[in-house]
Every structure is written in C-alpha cells, then in structure tokens.
Amino acid sequence: MIQERGSRIKTEEQDVTSYRIAVVGGTGPQGKGLGYRFARHGHAVVLGSRAADRAAVAADEIRERVPDADVTGAGNADAAAAADVVVLAVPYDGHDELVDDLAPVLEGKTIISCVNPLGFDKQGPYGLEVPGGSAAEAAASIVADATVVGAFHHVSAVSLWGDAEYLDHEDVLVCGDDADAKQVAIELARSVTGRDGVDAGRLRLARQLEPLTAVLISINKRYKTRSGIAISGVQGL
Amino acid sequence: MIQERGSRIKTEEQDVTSYRIAVVGGTGPQGKGLGYRFARHGHAVVLGSRAADRAAVAADEIRERVPDADVTGAGNADAAAAADVVVLAVPYDGHDELVDDLAPVLEGKTIISCVNPLGFDKQGPYGLEVPGGSAAEAAASIVADATVVGAFHHVSAVSLWGDAEYLDHEDVLVCGDDADAKQVAIELARSVTGRDGVDAGRLRLARQLEPLTAVLISINKRYKTRSGIAISGVQGL
Image 1: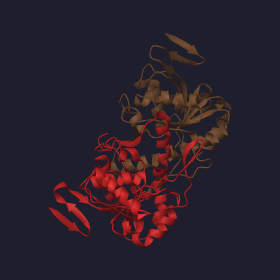
Image 2: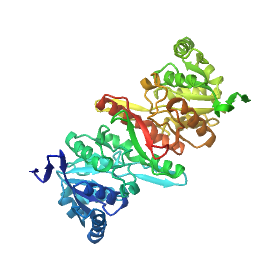
Image 3: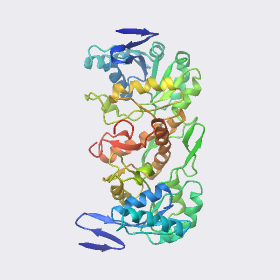
Image 4: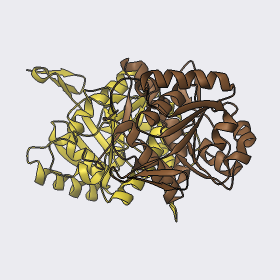
C-alpha cells in the first residue's frame, strides 16, 4: 500500500520513505554515484547540472543500469525546484556562488551537503580553510530558510558506481542541527550502505567530516585501495 | 633470541620490536590505558606525571593487572629521558608549555602525540582552533630536533583499560612526515588493536585526526556507546 504524504511517498510494507531527490552536481562522479544508489533503491532522482543535456545523458547512464529507475536530468535550478531533498555534490570551488544562485529554489527544503573543501599540493591532500567553518555551514547561512545537514562525504565515487548491492563495510556520518532533516539523510544512507547513517552530532562538526576525506585520499594512495570510514560500537560492529 | 639495538630490544621470533616507552600524562585515563596496553604486550613502560608518586601508583595499578609488566612511574621529564619513544597523552590545555619544558629531554626522540584539542559548550564537543594547525604540529615546531607523529587519538580510554585482548574492530590512524617514526606508531598499534596502525598520511593531517574525536564523543552521547573508527578497504575490512 502506497500512501502519499506531500510529495513524499511512503511504502508502508517496507517502512521506507521514498523521496524526490535532486542531486546538484549530478554529472560528477560523486553526484552520479549517489543518484545511482538512490534511484536503485526506489527514490525519484533528478540529476542537476549546469547543462541540462549533460544531466540527461547521466540519467540515461543510470537507467541503463537500473531500467525501472525514476531518474531524469535537468538544469541545477530546475532539478532543485522539483525536489524535497537537495543533495549538494559539487566541488567546493564556486560552491558559495552556486548555492547563492540556487537560494530561491532551495528555501524550505532539506539540503544534504556532501561537499569536501580540499586542496592538493606536493604533500598530498589537505583540508582548506573555509569561511564559515565548513561548506555545510556556509550553505546554511546562505539559505537561512533551508535545513542543511552534512552527509555522504566519505564514500568513494568508484564504489558508489560499482556493482556491490551495498557498501556494507562503511558508515555514512550525518551531522546537522535539525533532527528531522538529519533523519532523512540517516534513512537515505540505507541506499548506500544497507543500514542507517550514523548521527554524528551538530552541523558544526561538518568541519571535521569534510576534510576527513583528505585522510582517506592519503590512505588510498598509500595502500592503493578505496578506503572508507566505519564506526565501531554503533551498529553491531 | 633477543637482539639489542641501541635500547630497542627486538624479539626476533615474533618480529616485534620491544620499545622503551614513556607516557607523558600517564596517570590520565588515556595515558594509563595506553601504558597498560603497551606493557601487556611486552614493551617497557614508564608512566610520567607531574607528581612522580602518582605515576608510581598508576604503575602499580597496571602491574596488578599484568604481574610481569615492566612498568614504572616517574616525573614527566625523568620518564621522557629514560625512553626512546615518548607518548604525549596530556590535555591540550597547557600542552605547549609542557612540551617546551620537556624539550631538552625530547630531543632526538620519537614523539607520538595523542593530544585532542577539544572544547565543549552547550552544543557538545568541538575542535578548537589550534595555533600551528594541530597539537602534533605544535609539538614538532617546539622540539625541532624530535620526530613527531600523531596516533591513538580515537581509542576510548575505557576500552583501553578494559579486559578485551584487542580492540579489534578499531584502527589506529597514524600521521607523520618521517617514515621510520610513523612505523614505530604503526607497530605499537598492534598492542591496542592486534594489527598494524593505518598510515594516514602527512603530519599536517593531524588537523583532521585530532578534532575527529569530537565526532566520536557526539556519537557516544547519542548512542550511549563507546564508538571507534575503523578504516574499510585496508586491512581485510
């Protein structure tokens, strides 16, 4: 039995809410990978891009892999306007300007920021100094009427696009100041890891989650692997 | 067969080097817990404290649990002077002054910093702004002639002092700019987790590792647990 709740569709047998999700930056590897995972697990996905035609191509790529996926492509603003949940999967470079441009269509929505403000030099990756503390906090201050959480920073784009049903050795860490918005990201994590995301505390802890990706990239290089984060002591580990 | 290498004793059968380790701040829960683990796994440990008699009491507590442990207590400077490897397990408050005081006995040694510069307010724990970027980097700049690595930031003091043979669902993340010093911490991690520590990159990534503890403390509070970090994709996970 399907029950309509606003534009959120709840499939009651599975006790899983199906969301209408826009992925801003949906043609990048992280955004396309997340869109694939969300679509594969029954969410309606609109990939957003600066160029709507490139977004449509990425949506086709997902539909090739998941024939019954509800996935389309659009310009970033149209994508965001059509969704309840907007995932920001864009490079940090230009992030604030993009969020500012999209502010009118982001108001009132749940925004999930997966932005990793990283720099690279001869010594490898490092966390950038970010005005406002973190990209997630910057988005929250630019769109004061939206609810921002941070999540999905650490899952490898290659793993997201891979064949494994779930990345079940990893956890999605979710930070935010609004319990309902945080719960949306915690549920959406199931599409990626097969289990709830981990509530990692307040939004300001995005200052820790975002640049932690620099550590994972260092580990990947050192061990020639695709590393991920798991939290022991929470979900049976 | 035991082979002497300077004051490092190598037990060749096991291919495990036995170190002479000072734990500065060895009467605090983190320091005493690490000292217990190192002593239990055959390293010679000197717990350091501002008050040598308190350090002796903590050493007695460890010996009660590990009767054949080579563990003693001393003032911080005497402890550090007697060791090859000095673990800094002190609160961040007063850290720079303490390291400056100890600088003469730290020169030429391998220093492992487990210092977590955290603040706490109504919203919970957060990472402090640290001059020099991180406590580990600050120690490295204060004692220019020592080799500093960061490690052991994330293991719970309660788990360290617990009965489990190994905290085998957790990883010790090690950062540093000197491969040999990093290797010492990677080996010492075996005393805690039963496996090598994970090489997490350059010393400056201590900026990420140190305040990550704020995330774990938030998780502990939310889930009433003792959480830890594990890295998937590196050691069989």
